[in-house]
Length: 273
Image 1 (cartoon, rainbow, N blue to C red):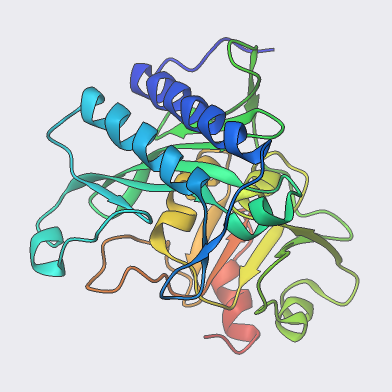
Image 2: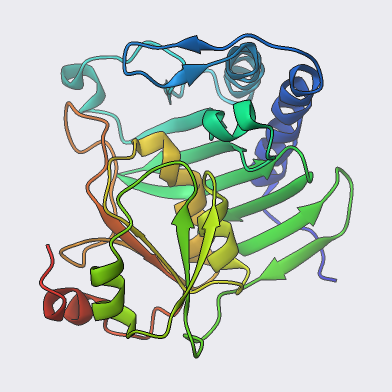
């Protein structure tokens, strides 16, 4: 095992993610109601409880930094466009998995600077696994609060490659994956931002997302994957960026572990975008 991450803010944000996870689990263990939001996505008391914990905690860490979160009202682009540094949060990523009680949901907290995630914490409340990273500090994994920290890294593209895929959303293109990886790849279905973490730990190789996601779904896990040695690219081959405009919807993207491969060339050869 390695020593703990040296970045003090990362440790504080990781602890805050654990606090939010405990609030989620208190509701997960009981009966709960499910509301349907205007975009037809589910909402539970756990989403709101985690939001309250995170918003209060981040305000204590740095009250000057603005917050963009799935469960908060979004400020207009005219105000957001001047931000160089802000928090980007999904208090409960994978609410559909939460409702199904399959454990595949996460707490995502990211710090974004100049359009790129520079600090990220991803907590899986059921298993208590915490994935955390900060720019230049590497990516780390911890099981249970106060547990040992382990440095994690991606792997060279495996034979056969393992493709992480969404459990509750469509959009996984088998034809495109065959063009990128060949015919002999394996599929590992998993909910929420855990797909990125699977690649960051060297247990999968690629995640192709052909459907919509929101910026708060990906930023924290992108930081983890990039610091573990991987990359998250839009389908033109450029790094996935944030606070691009009025919409908070991401372009379709490709998350990979083996960044030494010329993925932009493979994307072009596959006929993308």
